[in-house]
Image 1 (cartoon, one colour):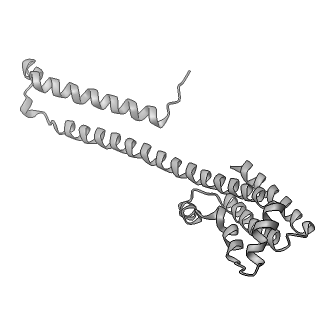
Image 2: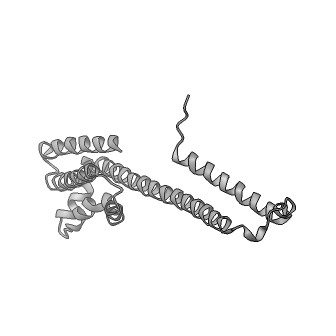
Image 3: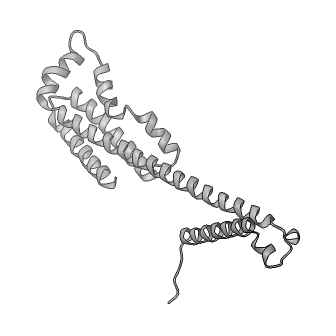
Length: 194
């Protein structure tokens, strides 16, 4: 049965063969074996040994750099997925955090009270997306697919809309409950795709 060899196996065999040839050449030269059997060494061109050494060094260096590059790219991809997962988990955490008691007792009075501060809504809207600039660098690098990016943007838009409606219309559950359901569906979908 014919055995199909991968590129990695072939390159390993070539490296081993070239290494054995280099060692054999050095031993033959050191022991003057060819002179002992009557061959004139001055007529032999030994440049092939230098060429073989350069080729071996090139192949070994290329493989090491290639392995490191593959590992680096895989690490970038894993980090981008981890950042997405973390963002989605934070969104879920904030949905749980924005329950009726906290919204009505603590958030609404601070936003719409005498010394109202609308930055609270903006801060809540942006909190899960704090690492977006780092995430976008990974997107530019091609670590995130178009579909993952589209889903991320959908989650972000729906989350921001939910936070705004949840606080603004805190006393009208019919306004924010459908948004919460849609957002939770999107989050579940996004988490499953990671």
